[in-house]
Image (cartoon, rainbow, N blue to C red; front, side, top):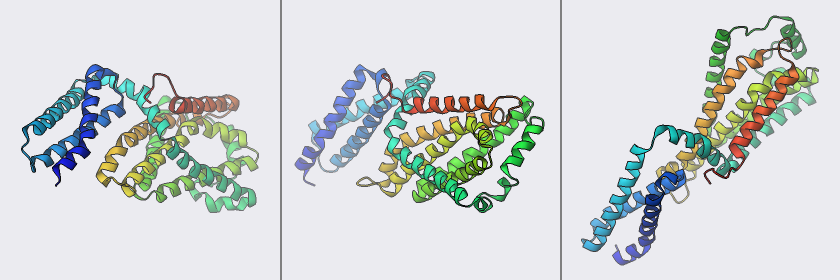
Length: 329
């Protein structure tokens, strides 16, 4: 190894770590997640350089500099990990880090949303062209009777959810199922990319076909009031889970100049934050679907349910994608 050339090439990395440490020691409480991750990456590269240099030279000045630099970085990184209070870290995670990740990854999220929306338009078009396509597209367990007949039966019967216990039990089964579907979208995206996009498209086809059947059967108000409140959180969450899978799949299958391990390590912070936000939203969606969504117009006007659905969706989008002055950039 040409030691002089190696030192010349790597000095910039060591200097970046020194600069990052100086900044961190001045404002450790104000470091963003990306700044900490960058410091960890520089620390690991410096340690790797130190191990390599030990094999080729015993230069005390160079060895001393790198030992001191690696030691400073080690103490700061691991001290920060042990001393950082849990509650403020969680507040920062929810308030700043999760929305910042969604804004940074909005292109991948847009791709996932496009696959889902394209599927919904395809499903709706299939029903518009030939309503008899309904039984061919929609699984038999969901296609038991005409939408108009189902709505009439529900509105004449007593409310299915009339106790807190029923709402909790039904909601738990729903958000467990929704999390399974989302995790499948994530897994297929992470392992194949194409599989994740296909699953998003397929779920969109089902939604579009069902929506079109209710619209063409003259009960569109019921459909949007029935699906809207929980769908405002559930449907975006499925898209977000698929987007997280695409991020992981890109890191695993298209790492570029990095090793797969390094590529996955770089993508992991964004992936787990998206999945955490997705899981939380799905839990709330399940609770809403198991209770509020189940009420007919006998208990809650459909206009009110649709208005709440719009508020939930708008609030979610503003939280995740509206830039705030105090957020992580």
